[in-house]
View 1 (cartoon, rainbow, N blue to C red):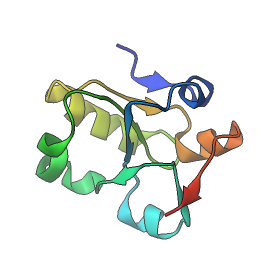
View 2: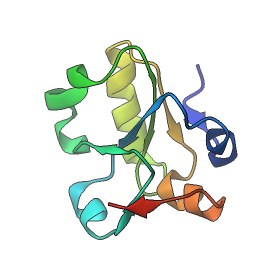
View 3: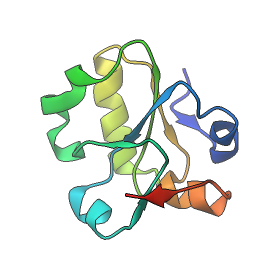
Length: 104
């Protein structure tokens, strides 16, 4: 399975996906927006919440730029057998591609 999904591909397939906001608390606090329907979980405490994620949905996660945070969270989800990918470029890439955000 691919580790990433492009913002363009996700714009056409948001339905039936669990959207996981995996930005660090400080990055999330500094922002006024999130992807529609996103659920925030602290990436520094992934072991505390990973088993609460849905097993019957594809998970799409994002951080700020789609780098080390997304990769480390994705590794933890894959280790638990979850179907997950992260958005290339993070929320910044999503917005640059014209993706919709909503107030958090």
